[in-house]
Image (cartoon, rainbow, N blue to C red; front, side, top):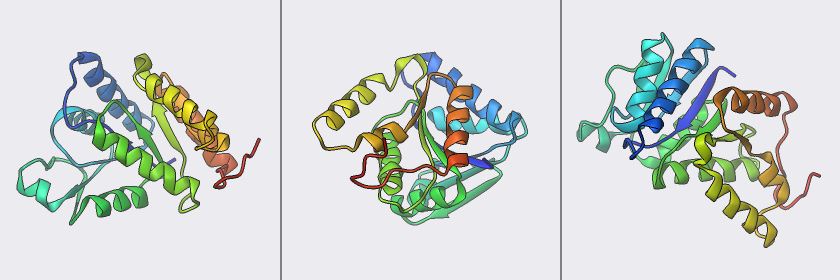
Length: 193
């Protein structure tokens, strides 16, 4: 894995542990020489993960819509800042530059981004793995809801099983690497078990 797209909040959240997690992810990606691809912001957890990766000597590619640059939300100190015209183009550029995707704590934007690339994978538009860093059980309620959706017949179990989920970055990176090696991906509507 050369580059990892990380979806996460542009705010700090209430618990300082979220910023500590983002900082740890940025530093560890740099240590492993895995480039960071992210939303290009300088605030919140976005800014923390980027700053941490940069301070550790890592490559950081930010992708941000022009309207957000105009509002001075962009991180000007990243390795490369790609400015685009829309949120849709932002996600497509992030997907093009990354080998896998991970969701850290975040809100609606994080959910929208990770669900879009996950649905693209399910539909066969790409074969890049998707993961949730479930540190402190942050994503557990969502994952439980997704299990309920699968149990109700609206999400193939193979698609749910395809998600890489781990409470720590090392475990999550190992799971993503396994999926990259196996080139495993679900087929829409097909249960691969």
